[in-house]
Length: 365
Image (tube, rainbow, N blue to C red):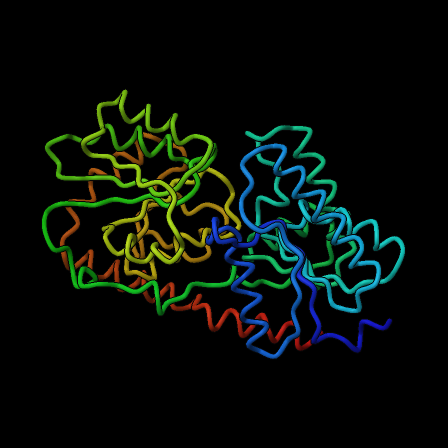
């Protein structure tokens, strides 16, 4: 067991990692790498750097990644720290049959969950790969208690192998409130959505619910993010006559998000998926922005209806619209309390605290 004397040496495998053209792609992995380096660990990374948009580009990138990872895993004496496990596990599963490795798997959510809207065969393959690598892992890091229970039951894992670490936490020194935390500045209301424009994220529900608001209400909506459904959702807004009140801002750099979120009066988090944590909600809260959400799955571990946000029934257009209609009636003092409590909630997930706890996990291996 030659790796036992090399616990300060870590090999990170990930299919997502930032590049110059995609600076926010896999930024979470880069942040963890920086944190471990700062704490004295010797870290090496094998990753697919930057987003690939074409099928051929993805195929080439994965083949190169798998080949490089396979060769390194045959001889490495490092702890192997695996991210997005189903997508990166194949070379690790093969080498694990040949030699002993100390494996730490970091589960993010969609990398092990079978989504109803995805290709059934692809999802089944993903699920099988995830099961093989998780059952061979020495430690498994998950974003929330909810997801620890989900993963444990789904893959028949010993609960003692599971460690909760909330997705790298939130940089509460960058995601900070501005003056509106002292109460609403005027009678207008600015709502925001931040995330992927893909099936299951509830963006269609949000657009339809927003369209039911009276045009006499001074309420605007900004949608931040890109994805497969972007054009479809833009067409939906146009067909519902909401172009003047709803703006698509497209994808943005992670570094720009605090400034964008600070403008919002509320972040709408309408996801209809079982989110493993929902970090975007915490990022908004760190800016003193209450969230409007269903509170389902991992989101429920930090969201409390009436304390740091407003709850609606998941996927229910009429219920979400009714909640949005009521937002302007929340007085300044009530809103101020929501903002303060949102910020206090996010501080419990401060990045420095989370990263320090993560380093301690590797120190104690």
